[in-house]
Length: 74
Image (cartoon, rainbow, N blue to C red; front, top):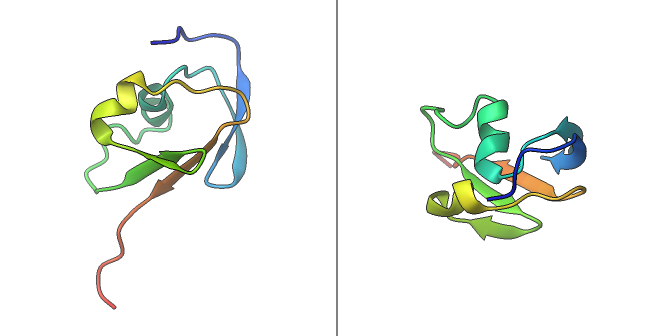
């Protein structure tokens, strides 16, 4: 797991954010989403990351992170 380090810019759902988070899980925790009661999925640079791998998924400057929630109904 990469150590927390200097702030870098990532793209979170299309918006630039500054973070020191070294992993996907750390980024979600920083944003208050690690214990969110609702279901959601994450992708890094267009690749779906299973929830079991969030803690080990490293993040690098300019990574694109997409957080999506299912839509019920139709």
